[in-house]
Amino acid sequence: QRRVRKGIPDSLRGYAWQVMSGGRELRMRNPGIYDQLVFFETSSSDHDIIKDISRTFPHHIFYSQRHGLGQRSLYNVLKAYSIYDRDVGYVQGMGFVAGTLLLYMSEEDAFWVLVALLKGAIHLAMEGLYGPGLPLVQQCLHQFEGLMSDHLPRLSAHFAAECIHPSMYASQWFITVFSYSLPFPVVLRIWDIFMLEGLKIVFRVGLALLQAAEED
Image (cartoon, rainbow, N blue to C red; front, side):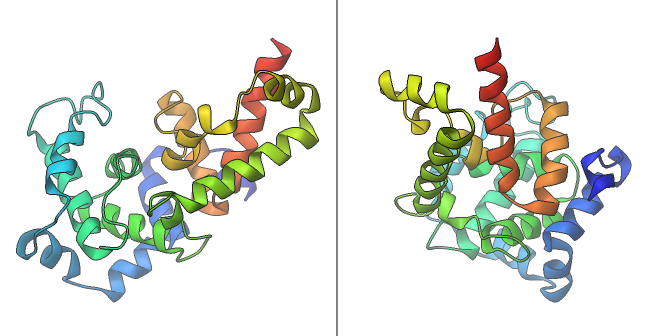
């Protein structure tokens, strides 16, 4: 845990994420499934996925080229997941999670890590962040509001007086695990811990950001 919190070496990060999330084991237990989903099945979410691809990390070199390798890989992973779990399907925030994974591993590895995260191979299943009604998002925001009240009482009271609810600023923190909100080097350090410890790092970083803003 101490070593992960210091930051995983970049050359080992992809493999470490696969192991810590449980995605590596899932891939080994399910040979051929990814290719079946990508090449032989159709997704009802195709239109939405294609529409959102160019909006996912548009300024990152890997994803900036229209129909380039990055966009094609991201499409394949999101399509495969939308078929694998038709109850959840595809939700826009998934693109940032899958897109971050693809920067450190192959398509198939990224797919199985996404499955591991959403289905809860090791940690709390994240599929509730994306399912109908976003139930886990609502739960996390409620918990975050309580933590703010406990740890940042003055700021919590100020937000309440101004009718500022966590849903106005923190939903994306949970849905994308900060990959949409913070500089990429910071995101990587957060994700190292996220892969080891789960979503609780989002609460910790969120509180730290608000505390720093309050002090400023």
